[in-house]
Length: 92
Image 1 (cartoon, rainbow, N blue to C red):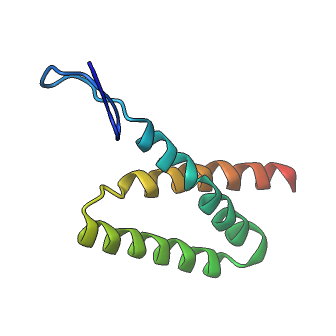
Image 2 (image 1 turned 60 degrees about the vertical axis):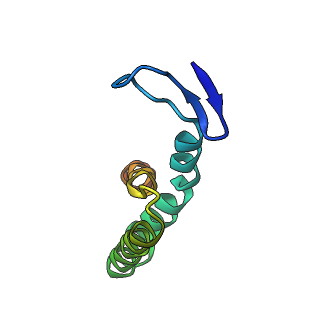
C-alpha cells in the first residue's frame, strides 16, 4: 500500500483503489443537486431541467478537455437531486 498526493492505493493490479479526492469531489457536487431539485420542485420544472442539461453539458465539456472522469460530479449531483426532490415533495 502506498500513499500518494491523490489518496491511498493498493499495489496489486485489479484491486480496489480508494481515493479520498473522489469522495470529496462527489460530496462537493451535492449542493448543485439540491439547488436543481429546488428549481424543479418549487420554481419551474423547465428551468430546473434546463439547469440539469447545462450542468451535464458543462461536465461533459470539462471531461472532454481535462479528462478528469467527471461522471463522479454528475453522479453526486444526481443523487442529491433525487433525494432533494423527495424531501421537498414530503415537506410540501
